Image (cartoon, rainbow, N blue to C red):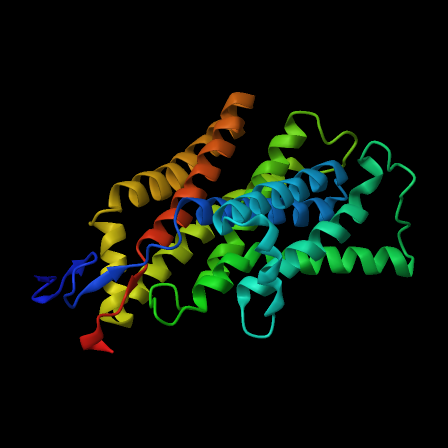
Length: 303
């Protein structure tokens, strides 16, 4: 079977040479990566502004959203703990350990806003407070870029095997965190926080544009890397997943989001802000999902 100027075509389970899709990671892993990214991003932004209620929300998104999706994917919750036993050789193991550490120390950092734990207040400037904050932030950073790290460690899937992927994943996580922070503050959840929302909104625009730039650089790199990477890029731009990637990831996630941001800036309508959050987060998820789906293995004849 031939395609792409006489090159081997994408095949399913047939015993012929060609580009084969990876089929192990799909919806549940995409959900886990998405929720892990925005939850960790929200926590990191919240630590910067000392917005503990939002930090708690980010923690819950990671612990129950990301953790729940991973448990459903593994299929055997009582045996799932075994994935942490190989931190020396597995990014999946490191990621799970980082999630556990983040859940524990992240909870300690924002426990004072949890009913019944108001007594657990970390004093600024103390060794204990600094240690808890440092461990919570470091583990949140790892959780935020985890999907990029675990995917880029797959040499058999060239479209993923690049240092650009963790960079892109972290930018997506940070963007999601900024978006949710702005939304929460505008809905009055921030209380007496002294946050300059105009600056935060400019940061969001900057992150969106950086996101678009990283996507362009990523795809250009894949086009010039090797044939397998080029096949994956073509699947995003004019193949099976192009309507999702271009429509959901680029149009909704970047173009529509930018339009709604500027519309909100001039009208200050809260519904427009809710639209910004929805469009941005939807675009983030679609990009993560399509990146998973276009992972293809290099044919034997090209190895």
